[in-house]
Amino acid sequence: MTDLPLDGVTVVALEQAVAAPLATRHLADLGARVIKLERIGEGDFARNYDRAVDGMASHFVWLNRGKESIALDLKSPDGVAVARRLVESADVFVQNSAPGAAARLGLDPDALAAADPTLIAASITGYGDDGPYRDRKAYDLLIQAETGLVSLTGTPDTASKTGVPSSDIAAGLYLAQSILAALFRQARSGRGAVLNVSMFDATAEWIGHPMYIQMHTGRQVARHGLGHASIVPYDAYPTADGRLLIGVQNDRGWRSLMAEVLGRPDVADDPRFASNTDRVAHRTECDDAVAAETARFAGTDLAARLDAAGVPSAVVNDIAGLVNHPQLSARDRWRTVQTPIGPVQGLLPPMGFADVELPMGDVPALGAHSRSLLAELGYDAAASERLVADGVIGV
Image (cartoon, rainbow, N blue to C red):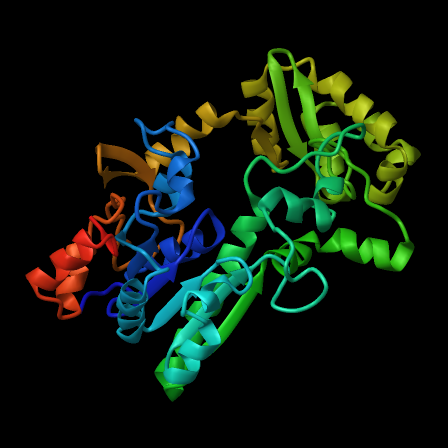
């Protein structure tokens, strides 16, 4: 045993795209053994989204390190038999197939859990396992649209999806959290679980305060670009050489910003801006007053003044700014990850344990572990090669 939290836990995953692979990658980061069931030839279709990482797909490299890959034909009885034997040896089964697809393949989560009451059978669906939307296609952007997330994102003139697959990520995180809770209960009672996290439910939960505003006031929260719908000033403001985001959380922060940092106590005392409610009501005038003063300063000088006064600020970075961010390098967050075509850099998992560094295992080639997994299941070399020759197993 190691000090990794999930050492000794085995996960078998019939997964593709983003949501379920994100959940299982976090389990792998925490020390679980994750065995990924993939189609022969194509594999997880996220393998082919792009060729941005030295010829590999960026999504796949991000989401699938630390896993083992077995390629098999789940439309053949022999392929299903291999998959079921893998599940029988596992603690957790994860799937995000289309509704009913896993059952048609002989890997119905309810049936697997009924056969093994200790198994945790976890599914990600688009809209849940019942209801009128159960069988609808449910890609990330579609869910962002149906939940109204796009209505909150973008500029006043243009709705927009988020720049990362938020609905996929939300569902994947909730599934990982649910599996951890089920493992805790399993350790105490021996009971397994049947779990379902829908992308729609996960994203609806993330809508949060705009949903409550709508229900209790009948008002749709407006889009404000980088601005905050309920707090002013909270936006990117011009500097002499660019822009700086400034966020004021309360009236004390407002006075610190205007009187101490920007030298305009008269603006701080303007009755139009006396409280956050007043500032929101006079958003344009308040933002204009702040912008007129911030534009006098270079960005680094203004950031230093804001820091000294305890007023929150941030540089509006692009992704190159993140990659080269001094906080990542100063905290030694980068590690080397091995892939089928050589090493790449990746960020340490965000879950930090003081006593052990979480692993960042290899990104597997399609079917890289097919033969070794068959051997573990008791198939001798001749039987394994017959399965390969018959097209049941890919290597």
